[in-house]
Length: 127
Image (cartoon, rainbow, N blue to C red; front, side, top):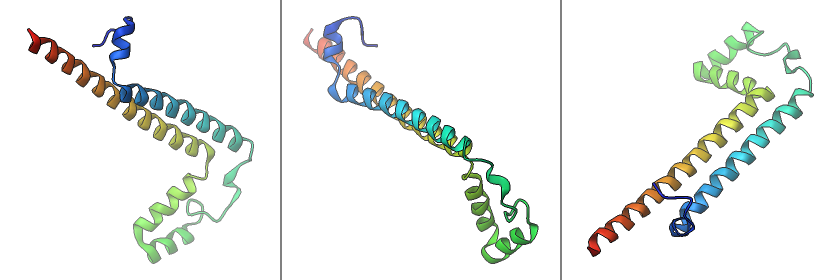
């Protein structure tokens, strides 16, 4: 592991690794802020379940969708209905931002490990 208390060790880290780390933190903060904003704005919009013509409440409409486009069409229709809920939208935004930030931080760590291994190989090769 790299010594983060030593300023020379921090400068020796690859520039791309630092950029990935900064990008990961930026993505996480922006994604969670956006998720919070979407949830907050959607919570005051009112109840979206006032529409009585949804497949959840109308078996006739659900059966018509299933006959015309199949089970997959019914599933996609149910998902689109579920995604109209601000809580679900916020959860999707938060999950995607967490995964993207975790990917950036993971690759930054891999890059730091690779640079550390290169330095140790260079030090051992000079002996």
